[in-house]
Length: 73
Image (cartoon, rainbow, N blue to C red; front, side):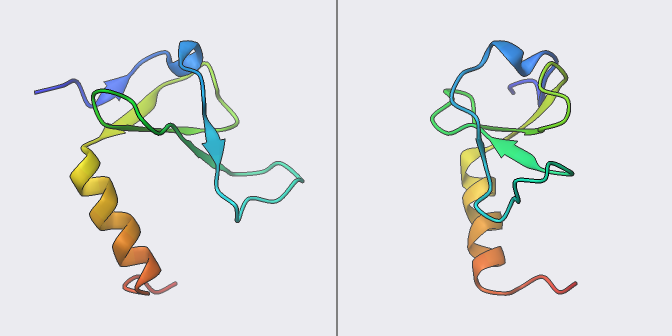
């Protein structure tokens, strides 16, 4: 099994923020597509910090559930 954390994600290129993230900074998640071991996700405020690594199938299921409105605030 792949380590679920990339301890220093700063060297990875191609991070993107959610289209829902505003320009004022604050709490944003960044996602990196097309990583060979899964989907890395990190806090945009700490780009040199760790990233959590999710299996591609699990991430796809999570995104599908969000789009379907399965989570309530």
